[in-house]
Image (cartoon, rainbow over all chains, first blue to last red; front, side, top):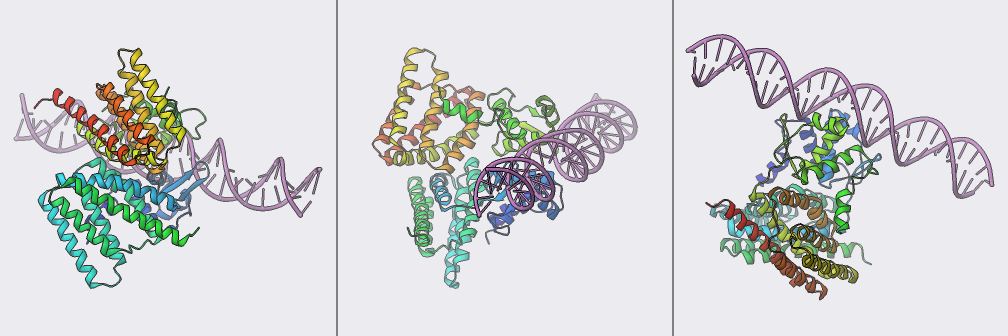
Length: 234
Length: 234
DNA sequence: TCAATGCGGATTGTCGACAATGGCGGAAGC
DNA sequence: GCTTCCGCCATTGTCGACAATCCGCATTGA
């Protein structure tokens, strides 16, 4: 399941990656996103170089790449630490996602091939089936949700858009989810919204696809804002 | 004029920058964006290290940062060359800008302070004045245009959005402009559209501000597409 | 007792050298 | 004359060592 995502994550992880820096980068990013290295903890160059069995050169390069993706924060002459993320940051990202994925849905409705649309329906069916079979669908919901959005973004056929969303923002989103354990607590509603979006794409209604996607992400954002208020009532 | 942009460009260029890599990065980016180093030409590490008087270490770091911004393209064990850009890429960027700056205008309408709005009007006035004084307003138009969009993006008060647009996309846009010498050949129309956008922001009409901004950028994109067709008629 | 200052350790920034890989040109064979 | 293969050279990838900077702690003085 969600082969596409796995592939993208491990794209550079296998040993066929050309340089050490590539491999170290892939491992580090995975460890950080999945919370293996705790948020806020220090990322020592010397330490990690020894741990991964490489020199500091490639490791520094990996760290700089992570820095440009905002997964770590660096302070000159002091050190690097895993980005510890605020709710404010998360909300900001959702505003950006709303704009970018709305545009992606619009373009997908105009450009997706028929078999791509068919693949979307297939994914929806899998999703519904999983939800019937399992009570605790939080995890699967979460991964399915990412994969669904992933495919629509790809459907935009706009490489720049794809790079900004999948290459940059989504790693942050995944890290946030691990960090806050944000359970998708409205799976049935989300599923219904997904279906509506796919229907709009199938009927090539770009305007509608964008609108629905923006609402979908907007609601997810409101959901997060509510959770934040419940945890931190002022 | 446009102090804000100059500042952002030279933010890391002055000697107070903390590390050599920072300074080299700023110089290299400037040279690339402004076309001093020709698009498509090779960027040799050894060569540039000697030219800038630093070791290959900091220079490599600078190159990697440029790579993550898509200003250069790297091929493992072969070398780095300045990104040579296609019209397709430029069009893709404009679709992304349409989405992101539309969202920025929406947020700006909701969040900009009164004095920020006043500053926008001031900029418009300067712009109109310049246009009256000079016949060949292409250059000034171009810089004013960037500054106008720059301020509205800042007005969104969304750091993630600001980073993606100003920190990543705008350098590419500027490079494209130098490369294609894309003259803004519809200055008076653009100016009028700018005014409409500011009016929407002043009246706190977020919906309208977004719509107008998206149209504004959409028209710019269509303008570029027309130019491309005229140069390369199929 | 508290604040300021100077010292020591640890970490990052920078450098030069060596290793590995890819491209190019010449020579050999058909 | 053309193609193919081999070896050299240039460039990038990696490494270890040295220098610069910052943080924490102890010492000293008021």
